[in-house]
Image (cartoon, rainbow, N blue to C red; front, top):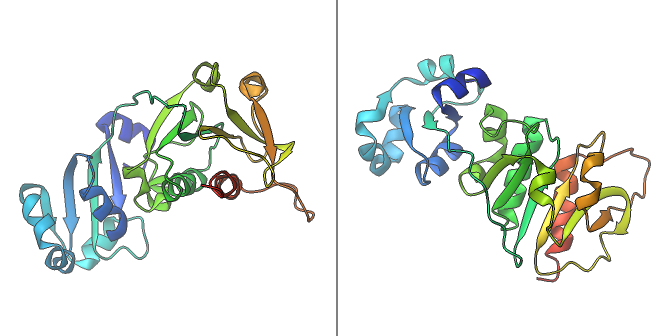
Length: 234
């Protein structure tokens, strides 16, 4: 499950750590296996009873031997991947579109940021990191269970949307920009920015003012700053 080809073949993915697994068990994902210590089971008896036929009890040492996390001493689970289904974005809500966000940690953090700001629709270009990569799942801290994610051709998806705010080095100051009641926040690759073919779907470019000498911002940090300004007056 650590490699994409095996996740794709089994249509399943791995979730590790008590926080993420507990969020998973409360969600709509189909959990097929739960490997847990007696300590985890005793603290979550109600959940363990429901998964009795899918539950395997192990020692902390046995769990550590099969886990990729250095500190995982309680539980891991295997769940079925969700189908890649299109998302309908209403004119009075915000969604995030990601272009070429290839770092799994960044994608997971952006999912968590979206969840924090109440954004539950995330549209990714086909070359973004895999949602079910272990680092994406771990860094999202359970938010992947609440945020809908759709992989598609971004240009085709975004074409025709009236309010697409593109994060750029040269654009309107995000601190003074008047955002509407809804729209799509388009975040590009932190090294290359937004792809040239997406320029025509952007209705307004927004920029985070640089006061120091850093060349760029981490994509997840930029997403958080923009989201904070969008919702500042809400």
